[in-house]
Image (cartoon, rainbow, N blue to C red):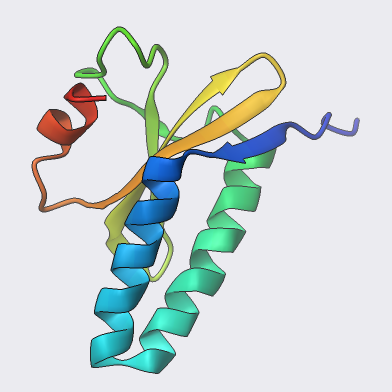
Length: 108
């Protein structure tokens, strides 16, 4: 049975996160930055196909019901935060796990 393909939306906040991370990595290792971008795109596709795979975030604010997180393969300290609504998977943020994730997400 084929899974229906969900639409993928990426919030401005997630795009800004990605730009910041890529800039940070590229300043240290351009190859790592390229691998990060490739890995993030693969993970986005996985999340789109299997939106229930991520861990449910218990501290999610009411504005983000069903918030989940999924690690970026090869960069496991980076987490993709997303929600599913109807036929859409929306990427909300991409953050390093050592940041105050609950506070950052709570401010959304």
